[in-house]
Each structure stands twice: as C-alpha cells, then as structure tokens.
Length: 203
Ligand SMILES: [Fe+2]
Image (cartoon, rainbow, N blue to C red; front, side, top):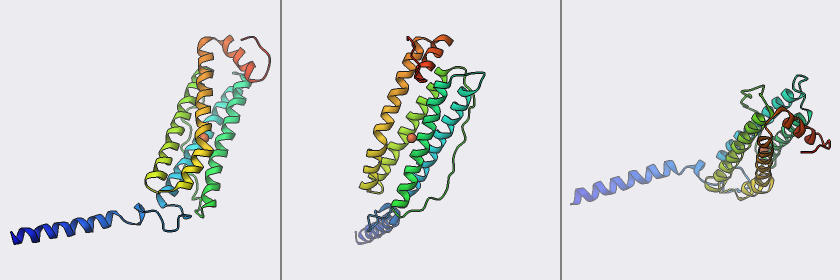
C-alpha cells in the first residue's frame, strides 16, 4: 500500500512536470498585454499572405478580362478594384503588427494557379470561393486571438475592420452569380459588363 502511494506520488509529480512543460510561455498571454503573443504574430503573418494571394488572383482576373480578345472592361475594373482592396487588407495587418510593436517578417505568398477563364460566371465562382476561404481564415485568426492569445484588442480589430466587409463581399459575389446564371450567354455577360461599367442597359 505504501509503495502504491509512493508510485501515485511519483506519477503525480511526473504529470505536474509534463503540465509545466506544456504550459510554457507560448501558451500563456504576456503579462504585458500590449505585446503580441507569438502565436498571434505568426497567425497575422499567415493572414497577410492570404490577403496578398487574393490580391494577386484578382489582379490576374482583371488582366484576363481586360485583354482585347475578351474585352469585358466592367468585369476587369471590378476585379482590379478588388485586387487593390485585398492589398489594403494586407497593409492593415502590417500596420497592426507595427502598432503592437511586432515586426513584419516579409511575405510568403502562394501564386495564383490560373490565368484565364472561359466566362465571367466561372471567374465570379472562383472569386466567391476565394472570399469564403479568406473569411474562414479570418475567423480562424479570431479564434486563435480568443483562445490562445487571450488578445481582446486583436479580436476587436478583426471584428471592426474585416468581418462585415467579408460578409458584404460574399453577398455581392453571390448576387452577381445569381444574375449571370439567369442569363448565361455571351449577350447576358455583355449586358452585365455594361452595367458594371456604369453604362445604362436594360437587364
Ligand atoms: Fe481581404
């Protein structure tokens, strides 16, 4: 009985040591709450790369639809504006790192895997999937801020600066796809493109 008690004590001690090793500084918020937790700093860098990837995908879409063999300037302008917007999102996160005393360590951006689309509807479908992907990554970053870093300021920043815009963007692309699906012909795409250019057309 006595040896069993000693064994239990040894086991308890081992578990405490393991717990202490696991519960290291990386799993605790800093005492100085201004300083960004290393896990959140790394997660923000990943989000910057996601935003830059989205910017490059949109720039590629804009180049395709602006080509004289495609000539859909309204769609090209829409994707070009989106490319700038995604670049601004990346910059917002870089500025945020600086504001929290962290250093931006550079880009590691995945290149777009496609450079042409058969029709506008296909590109809007890809854009919708991209926005949903970026939205999911933003929520993941928010989860890390909430559960790992216990960083209320980062959560507040993501909530105020990104979530609403992502929902509006997904909603807009879904509406565009509904319109294009309803008139899935070159003429339908032409009329839609004219509307995006701000030219009056009967749709
Ligand atoms: Fe974005």
